[in-house]
Length: 64
Image 1 (tube, one colour):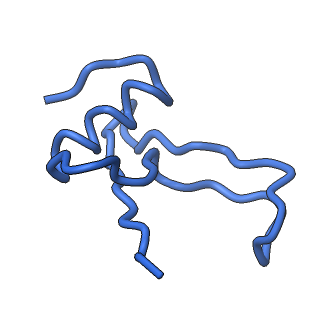
Image 2 (cartoon, helix red, strand yellow):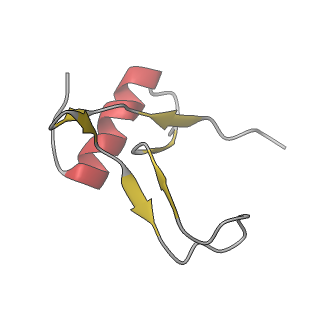
Image 3 (cartoon, one colour):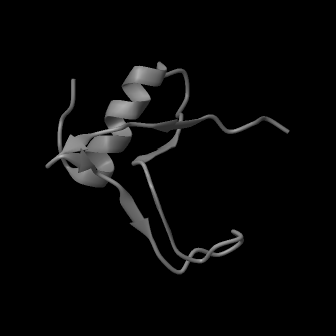
């Protein structure tokens, strides 16, 4: 079984950091939690490309 590579970004914001709020999560020890924005790597994209894509998908912003 191929392991999924998770990518995540840390976004400074207003003296803190932007987090994703996950609710009603199935098949996890906690059904609600906060995490840095991210997701799985797709195809042959680099870690940087995947992290930028995930942040764009989840926050709608472009990052450098």
